[in-house]
Amino acid sequence: MNVEHLDVLIVGAGLSGIGAAWHLHKNCPAKSYAIVEARAASGGTWDLFRYPGVRSDSDMYTLGYRFKPWVDDKSIADGSTILDYIRETARENGIDGHIRYGCRVLRADWSSAEARWTVQVERDGVAETLTAGFVMMCSGYYSYADGHRPEFAGQDAFAGRIVHPQFWPENLDYAGRKFVVIGSGATAVTLVPALAELGAHVVMLQRSPTYVASRPGIDNGAIRLQKWLPLRVAYGITRWKNVLLGSFLFNLARKKPAAFRKRLIEMVHAQLGQDYDVGKHFTPNYNPWDQRLCAVPDDDLFKAIRTGKAEVVTDTVDIFTANGIRLSSGEFLPADVIVTATGLTLNVLGDVAFAIDDVPLNVSQTMSYKGMMFSDVPNLAYVFGYTNASWTLKADLTSDYVCRILNMMDRRGAAVVTPRRDGSDITEEPFLDFSSGYVTRALHMLPKQGSRKPWKLNQNYILDLFALKFGKVEDGVLKFSSPARSKAA
Image (cartoon, rainbow, N blue to C red; front, side, top):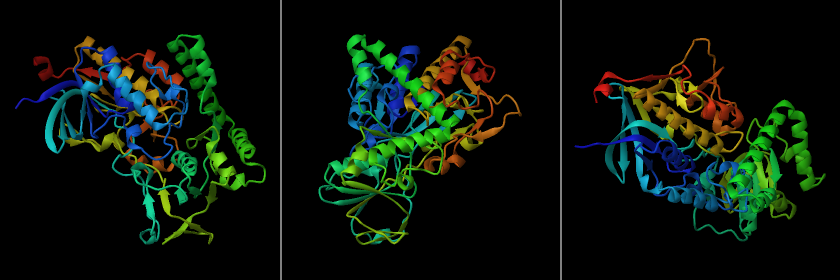
C-alpha cells in the first residue's frame, strides 16, 4: 500500500494553521504540504465559538496577519468578521485546496532511521496513514472537546438550562429571561452586555474580580491613515503603533503595578460613578497583567450596568436550586439560564500521542526552544502565541522561523533538526508566568522554559522579532543531521 508522504504536515486550519501555510507558500514554495483539520470547517476558535457577542479581546491590527491588512472598521471585531478574514486569506492564496477536513490526528511516531514522522489519522471514521518530514502543530492551546466545567452542588436540581459558552445552543430564548453568567474573564465580560442587548436581565457572578479596561471599538486613527496612505503602509504603521503601545503599557504595569492598578480603578469609577463599589467588584487581589486584562469595547459592559440591564455580584456559589443559585452570603439569584463561563481546558499538542523511536513523548519533561520547539524532539514545531499581546504576533514569527529552518536544512542537505540542551547550568522555570486558572490547572502538562536564551520565553514581540526574524538559525543549539538511511534514500 502506498503511503502519501509530505514535506510538511500542518495540524489545524485555524488562524495559526492558515498563517503557517502562507509562510510555506512564500518562503518554501517547493515544499509539499497539507493541513489536516479535525472539524468540518476552517477557522478554529472563530468557527467554534458561537455565543452572543463573541469577539476578539485584542485589536485586529495585531491579531490580524502581518501580510494581510485588516480593512474592517472595527478594531475589536466580532467573531464572524474574523472568520471571514481567515477564510478569505486561505482562498486568496490557494491554501484552502490543501485543507483536509474531518481529519483527526491520533498519533505521530518518529523514526530516526527513516528521519520522518508516521502519522495516524482518522478521516470520517476511516483510519489513514501519512508520513511527513516535518510536523507543525497549529492546533491551539485548549481542548475543543470540553471546556472547564467545575461541579457545583445541586446543579442537577436546577430546572432551567446550564450552558457552557464553548457549546452554545442555537435555540436559546433571551428576551425577558434571567441569566446568571458565572465567571469574570474575557468570555463573561463579552457575554453580559451582548445578552443584555438581546433583552435578557443578566447577573455576572464572580468569585473574584478581573481588571477591566475600556477601549474604543474603532481605531479612528487607523481609518484616517487608510485614506491618506497606501493600505499596506497604513496597516503597517497602525500595527507597529499598537505593538509599541501594548509593550509600553505591559512594561509599565510590571514596573509600576500600584500606579497602573490605581489608574485602572479610576477608569472604572469614571464609568460607574464614585458610589459604585468598585473596590469589591472591579479590584482584583493580584497585580495587573498577572492575568490577562479584559477589554471592554466602547464601554459596553459599563453601559449595561449603568442602565440596570446587568449587574455584577461578587460571591461564591453555595448550591444550585430548582430556580436559581443560593450564594455563600445567603443571597439568592433567580435564574432561567445559568452560563458557566468558567474557562478553557488546556491541552498539549492537540491531544496527539507522540512517540520517538517507540518511546512515548512526555512534553512536560522537555524544555521549550524559543517557544516553538521541544528539547531533544526532532522535526516538530508548535505555535503558541503571546499571553500579554495578540496571539498572531508570535504565530507569524514562529511560522517564518520554521521556514528559515527548513531552508537551512535544504542548504545543508540535512534531514533532521533537533534542539539540544546546551548545558546543565540552565535552570528550569514554568512555561508561563501567568496566574489565570486555565494556565495553573495545566502547568504540570506543559514543557518548561529555561533561565536563559534560547530556552527563555521573551513574551516580547520586539525581542522575538530580532531573535526569530533576524537571529541566526545556526545558533549551536539546533543540531542538523542526516541519518545514513536518509542519505541512501
